Image 1 (cartoon, one colour):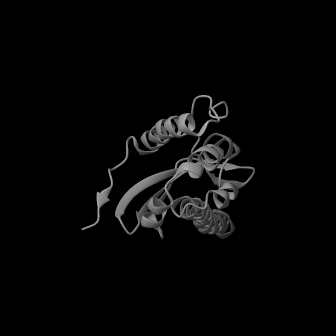
Image 2 (cartoon, rainbow, N blue to C red; image 1 turned 45 degrees about the horizontal axis):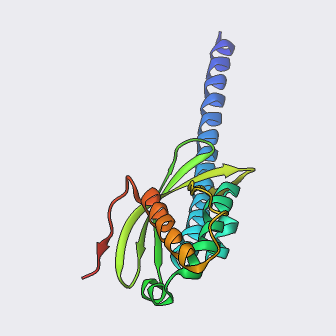
Length: 179
């Protein structure tokens, strides 16, 4: 009779130890995921916030590289006022929170501070082939069929820049100027 009481007790003890170990491993794995998400988000946001577009490629999905970064690099940056860039840099990025939505999607909340403004915003990330990447594909009509004459290109690029800013900022808090 004594032997039959030991078996359920051993099974219960084994179950508890396994559950505790699994839960601890799960928390560590989630912390590692959050660190990987934060690293990708910070890399992308720091590069973009400081106008180092080419550095952002390594942190972005192929769609973001093709639709957003390439457009900004080839069509927006060549006509962007260099004094404007100087007034907006250096930008300081602080990741304020990470939300894992699923095994392959997450959001990073961040604070961006520049010499002229501060803003809170959110960046979407996706996991592809085991790597977290910023996912910001913006549909810009005929981005590579834009006219090549400078005057038309500047006019159209200004329109597309407004579209990019609108798409990126909708559903987000507005900028607050520094005092």
